[in-house]
Image 1 (cartoon, rainbow, N blue to C red):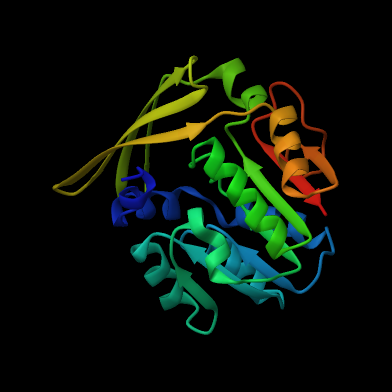
Image 2 (cartoon, rainbow, N blue to C red):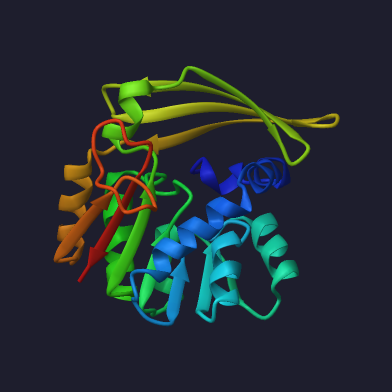
Length: 235
């Protein structure tokens, strides 16, 4: 069983719901709106719906897809009128969704193996002419300052993350421990690490003719040491 199919419980999701400030969501949605891609958005994966709900508030028609039952239930409770769907993005094409803009935000790219990521990008290209990927595990962002251990508390949950980079497979292995009250969840997250050039070639291979690389929502260029990669691909 792939790690992410059981990782996103109420403890993990609750931590991230508490850790992300509304100002961050607003800045990210501002970036998306600035692309002027069109009114229909596919948010995949959508997590607990923070981007989908803000986009809908601004007048967009949004479909949000996520594998986590807990996250989809939380999102649906907040915005019952939106199009929420539960399922594995490894088979995104089976959902039959089309949009003007597809987004893969929250550092959710790289969960699949290489072949799976190639299929995922091809499915996104078939679904929408414009794609935005928010990728915190791009090699140029991650490796210059790879953190060892991180401790944080948010949303009533304590989190400890221990990071290890496997050079032979170019994978980031993150040993997470979430503690909320008397409950503890320990899980290992695996993210495949690509350079910006590798991701660009994958996007071109999926059918996107142009790719722009940004280092943040302010529109600055992506470079070595940027803390995230925002890739905007167009068919």
